[in-house]
Image 1 (cartoon, rainbow, N blue to C red):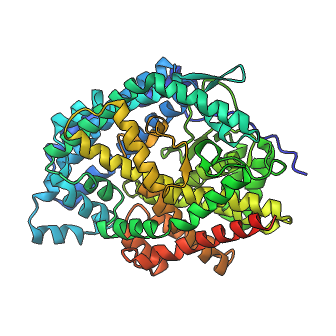
Image 2: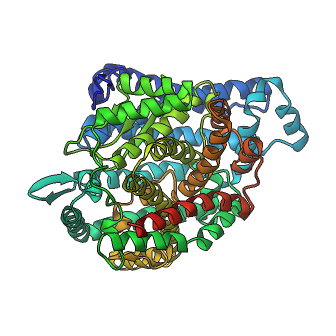
Image 3: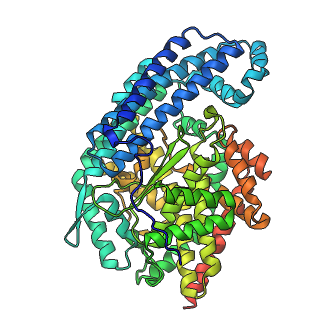
Length: 586
C-alpha cells in the first residue's frame, strides 16, 4: 500500500518565490533585458570568425534559456489564474524579449548566409563550433525565409497578441451543467462521464456557448490566419506547409507518405466506431459519446493512485524514468486539482535554466485523466533527458515532442493490458488505445484538412463563422470517413492548436509522434530494460538532427517510405480487430 501524500497543487515558488509579485522574477527580467540589449549591439559587429561566433552563440543560448524561464513561469501562473495581471505583464514582456531575440537571430542568419562556401566549410571544421554544426547549417538554410525586423516587431502586438487573447477569452468562459458553474476545461472533462445524460448536457451547454461567441472567435482565427499569410508573403513563401515542415525538420515526402497511409486505413477505425456506437445503443457514433467508457467499474481512480501507478510503471521501464517520476511528484512539479477558474488546456512547461518542468492539468478522477497526466509527464521526461545537451541544441521539433508523450502513455496502457483479467477490462483498455488511434488518424487528419482549407479561403477574404462551421463539418466527414454522428462543427473554436502562433498546423506532428512511439515501444519490448539508454540517446539527438536522419540513425528506417508508417498502423488495426471481436462476443 503506497501511503505517499501526493499534493495536487504545484510548487512554483522554488523557481521564482512570490508568483507574479516576485522580486526574484523582476531581477531576472531586468538582467535578461540588459543581456538582450548587449546582444543587439554585439550582433552589429559580428564577423565570421570561429571565436566570435562561438561567443555570440553562447550568449544567445544564455538569453534563450532566460527568456524561456520567464515565459514558462508566466504561462504557469496564467494557467491557474487567467486574470493574474502581473503574469499577463510578464508574458507580454517575454513576448517582446522573444521578438527582439528573434531579430538578433535573423541578423545572425543573414551573416551566415553571406559567407562564401569555402570559408563556410572552414568554419564548420573549427573545433570551437563542433557542437553547433547542425544548427548553423539550419540557420544558413532558413536565412532567406526570416521575417524582417519590422514584421517581427508587428508580431508582438498583432499576431502573438491575438493568440494570447484567444487563451484569455477561452479561460474566462463558464458554462452551467447540472446547476454547477464550470470552466471549459471542467466541462470538456465530462466527456468521459459514465452517465450519458451528463455527457449530452455538457456537450449542449458548450455548443450553446460556442454559438453565442462564434463571431468573436471567427475574428480571432481570421486575424491570425490573415497575419500569417501576409507574413509568409513578405518572406516569399507561398506554400503554407513550407514553414510547418521546416519547423518539424521534415521533408514533404515524409508527410505525404504518412498522409497516404492514414487515408488507406480508415475502415478498421470506422468499424470500431460503429461497434462502439452499437454498445451505446446508437446506430452511429455520436461525437459527445466518443470518450465514454466501455465499463463504469474500471473508470474511477484517485489522484494518489494515479501518481503511484505512474511511478511504479516508469520504474519498471527504467531506473532513470523511475527516478524522474518520483522527483516530479515529490517536488511539486504537477498541478492537478479539479477546481473552477483554471485553463482548459493541459500543458508541460519547461524551465531550462533550473533543469525542471511543470505539468498542468485538471485531474478528473478517471483513467483518461491518468493518460493525460502521463502524456504531459512524457514531455517533461523529454526535457529531463536533454538536460546535458548544449542549450542551442535543446529545441526539438513538435513531431518529436509528441513522441515522448505518446511513449509514456504506451507504458501505462501496455502494463494495464498485461494485468487485465476480464474481457470487460480488456475492452476498456483497447477502447482507450483506440481512442488515441482515432484521434491521430481521423481527428487530426480532419484538423489538417480544415486548417489547409481555411488558409486557402482566407487568401480570398474574411471567413464568417457559419462558413468556418461548414469547413469544419466537411473536414470531419472526410477525416472520420463518415463514421461520426452529430459532427462537432464548432471544434474549430475549442481546439487550441488552431490558435498557436508559434506552431501552425500543429496536427500532423501528433500523428508522426504517435506512430514513431509505436515503433519505439515495440523495440523496447524486444530489447527489455536496457532500451532506456537507447531511448534517451534518441531524445538527446532530437534537437540536432532532421526527423529523417534521427529515425535512420536510431531505428534504421526510411520514413519517406509508406512501409515505415504501415508498420505502426498495422499494430493499431490489430487493436481494432480485437476490440470488435471481444465486443461482438459479449
